[in-house]
Length: 286
Image (cartoon, rainbow, N blue to C red; front, side, top):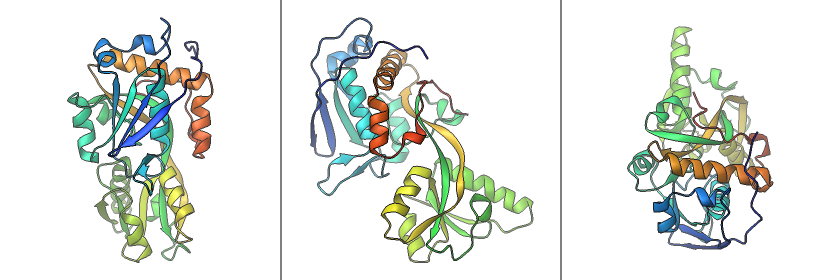
């Protein structure tokens, strides 16, 4: 992989106000750095505006002090620092994320969003993690669900309009083709299916692997993973297709934090080193 020379580390000054995160750095840029590639309009504004639905731990969530936390927050902080910009990390509803960035009301999406061909029609994606989907059931797996191929005839919850939604709908058709009953699929908000599984109102949740594993870890022994992670795909930083200069600058920033170890340090903090990507590819999802 060819990368630009890494910048030296800068101090990050953080203050989260009203649900947004603001960061700054003040070292001069060199002509071969990500900071030097920032488009003039963004440099003039001095801020990188990142849209995210802050309700998907461990990628983004609010802590007990109502401060935004998570791997996407940390990575966005590092990228903004390399671009010599303040970071405005905004909470935006999931269904509004793509229109917000496509309409230039925010610069980028970082929200655990899978890069795929359908979304590439509206945005371009800079791939920064890879992750699959996972079925989660109540502890003890009372319905004996084997994984995604075991959801036939089961009551399944998931976040609507996500990769997991597409996966479950495709499996439903496979169930029918095999003469088995389709699952009853309920579209919910992020994380809303887990209490319903715990209460016995759903049999399973289909979620991203990292979120699923976090729910099992933090669920006080209420849940377990069923089967294995399936269909790993890249997650991408979504940027409007006509903002190629901004995409280039963010790509250079991602390469810089990969090259100097900042990226892996952040992933290790959240237990996600296994999901690392090192190429900073553009639109690698299918």
